[in-house]
Length: 301
Image (cartoon, rainbow, N blue to C red; front, side, top):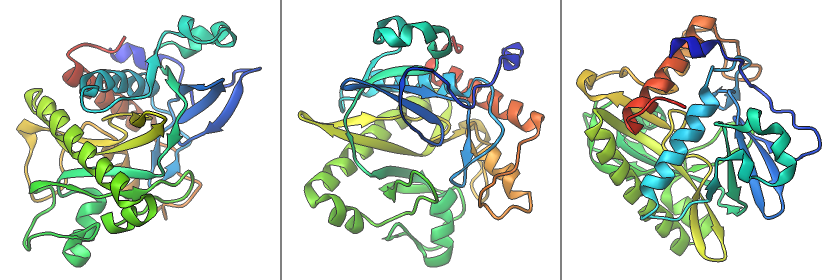
């Protein structure tokens, strides 16, 4: 698989004549009628800044792993996925089929709900930092004496604002409810908890701890859908179970490896972000490929 790391890295799609709706931190979104084509580039962001270095095969991992989870979780909630076959996309996309293959999805265009729905089963990342400063995470008081990476007695729901640029911010459930309304907020919380429970059970069977993850939802005339990506190493913390040692940071198969490298630099976490050394980019790619293999049971196509 390592020889695949020599494939060209795509950090920006350029499809002349197609309707580019917007470029996100990772995905380039094209509009076609009442549908969208989401192209997962090899860009990577950390601390809400897009890095100048792309990660080989990252877009393919994010797309194909999301498709796996959309299928696995569809009995809990509908999702926006329609197809990943470029030949099934509207005709204007066909001439770009080779660039699109493996890293794109045709999806329903729905109204995105502007809140990230985070579920944490373990105390890590920004949740750990909040706990250290005040004994609570997203307004939820936690027991005293917890260590970094400790398993929580039960998973907690910690929503965050969704920023297209700048930094996302953890908010309380009460703040979420005041923005979205209590009924929708409760529905998203309950769906997120159910999705996390089923996904974490699958991961456990694969020898992986799903420490935390974030979901994004949208709405159409029929109700709520799971959208964007699902349970990828960009949006989740995946820890090999056999190497789990609470009381500090964990070995991970996700984006944390990049965050840890950046933390070792004298960088103020404001744009422009520094480039990654080739060895860090390739090591990140290998982690993404490994978690894909472990969770899906097969190699990346």
